[in-house]
Length: 243
Image (cartoon, rainbow, N blue to C red):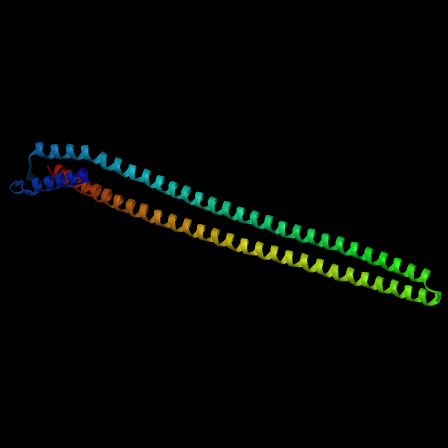
């Protein structure tokens, strides 16, 4: 900023020297102090490279800011992706645990049902044998024993059917819970990724706008300074040509 002000002051000084110069009679020429003009031009040359250097530094800072913004956005997306993957892993693990527990419960129910069925058959057979051996009416004993066997077989069949239904219901419920858990985890993961993407886009937009405004202002200052110098140079060139 100091170099910019210095250049403006030097340009004002040159303009003042030209406008205050004495006109040569019968011509459009003006007498000016050559030492003052030379000194101003030298000072302008000394200050101008600093402005150009500053513009280069600003351009470098712009690249650094954009690079940093991209890096921050990438890290944010990576963290969101990692969190989503962890949520999905946890959901899969919980679903596997629910399914395994349901399978274990079903196996235990089948074991107990089979054990009870075997016990029922054994007891029925023993009771039938006892009735056959102990009864005087063999035919009635056999009929009653057969009835007991059929009843026991029906009870065993019903018990197996009921047990299979309970096992199927338990497994279906476990699968449903696992599916709901996975759906919820996927939904939360999608929301996290969506929020991270929106945050990254907003950060890039804000950074780009800031840097573009900074470069625009710098370009305007440089262009204004260079145009003033060109005008001054053309003015001096016209004066020299007229001489």
